[in-house]
Image (cartoon, rainbow, N blue to C red; front, side):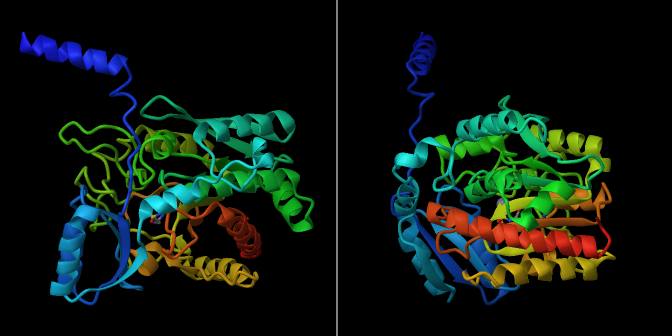
Length: 422
Ligand code: 0X9
Ligand code: ZN
C-alpha cells in the first residue's frame, strides 16, 4: 500500500514537472583557489579532496610545470579546507570569491542587436543550431551539413563542412567536448562566420584553399545541461550502472592508451572518468566512426578547450617519449604562440606535448587521431584565461579570444604547409 502511494506520488510529481524541472544548480559563495604545490604529500592531499565531488570540483588539474591546481570549494567546506591548507603548509591564491556572481555576470542583458546572432553573449544549443541552419541556407554552394551521430539523450551531433573548391586538404575542428567550456563553441561559430564572410586576404586564402570540417558542439547533452541545469558540468550525460554519478569525460574515452598511466580515472564520480570501456560514450563512438569514414579527407585535427592558454600536441599518454616529428610540431606551435603574443592583447600561450607541458591525459580525441588514424598534425587549443575567470570567461572577451584564434590559426596553417604537411 505504502509502495503504491509512493509510486503515485512520484508519477504525480513527475507529470507536474516538479522532478523534471529541477532548479538550476547554484554556486553562491563557492570559491575557486589556485594552489601552489611543493611536494608529493601536498599533491596527494589535494588529489584526495578533489575526489569529494559534493564539496570540491577540480577546475584545473595539477601540472608539473606550473605546480598549480585550481579547485572550487563549497561554502560549507571552507573552514575545513582552510585548516587543511594551513596544516599542510599549502599556499593559495583566491581567484574567485563567489562563483555565482561570475555566472550571473556572464548572463548579459539582451541589447538591441541581440536579435541577430553575434559574439557578445553565449548561446544555447538551440540557438547555435538555428544559426547553423541559417548559414547552411545562406551559403548553399560552399557549405554542407555533416552528421556525426546521436548523443546518449538522442540529440543529433551536427557539424558543417565549408569547401570552396574540390581537392583541398581538410582540417577538422572539434569543439565543446567539455560542456562547461563555452568559449569553445563561441569561437568555433565565430570562425565559421569568418571563413564565410571575411574580406581579409589571408582569411580568404584560408577559406579558399582548405576544406573545413567544423563541429561546434560535440558534447551536445552536456552542453545543454550546462546551460539548463549546471553551469559547471563537464562530462557526458550517460548514467552509470553501479554509481549515482553521471557521465564520463568524453576526452578520456577514445581507444588510444585508454586508462593507462593514471591519465584518466576509473571512478565514475571523477571529472576525468574514462568510461567503462573505450567508446562507451555514444558521442565518442560516433566520432570515431565518422572520422574513420572520412579519414582520407583530413590532414589536420584541432580540438578546442578552455582554459589555461596552451597549444597542446601529442603525446598525452607519456612524457618519456615524443612523436618522431616533434621538432616540426614545436615549430608550428611557436608560430601559433608568437602570432598571438604579437597582438596588442599580448596574451601568452605555452606550447608543447600535453604530457610534458600539462599533465598525462589518455584516451583523448587528438591522440586517437594521431596514433590510430596516423595523422601527423593534431593540437588541442586551451583558450583564455589563466584562472581569473576560468570557464566563466566574460562575454566581452569572446571577440578578443577569437581574434587570437584567427592569427594563431593563420600562422599554424601557414607553418604546417611550409613544413610539407598540407
Ligand atoms: O584534460 C583535458 O582533457 C584537457 N584540458 S581541460 O582543462 N580542457 O580539460 C587537455 C587535453 C589535451 N590533451 C590531448 N588532447 N592530448
Ligand atoms: Zn576541456
